[in-house]
Length: 81
Image 1 (tube, rainbow, N blue to C red):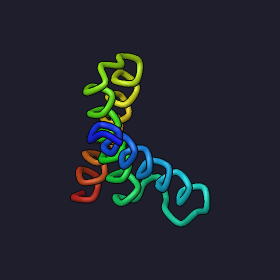
Image 2 (tube, rainbow, N blue to C red; image 1 turned 120 degrees about the vertical axis):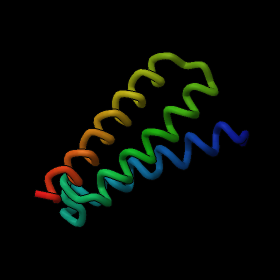
Image 3 (cartoon, rainbow, N blue to C red; image 1 turned 30 degrees about the vertical axis):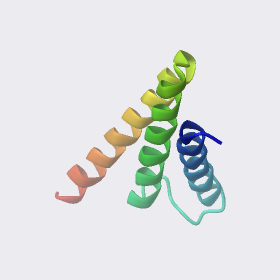
């Protein structure tokens, strides 16, 4: 496996673990751990897609990363009120 494969594999694994833990009601979608797992996992998957120059997944994972970043922002913005 190449370095790009490992980056993508780790990113997708983080995303799948977050999804599984949410389905099992171990992590709530509003929890900071869930949001960070999505942000990191999607960011790594986006990086791997960029290294592979595969535009459809670059767009998908970039959007997922941005949505997760907005969720993290909202988490901290709402917790200060």
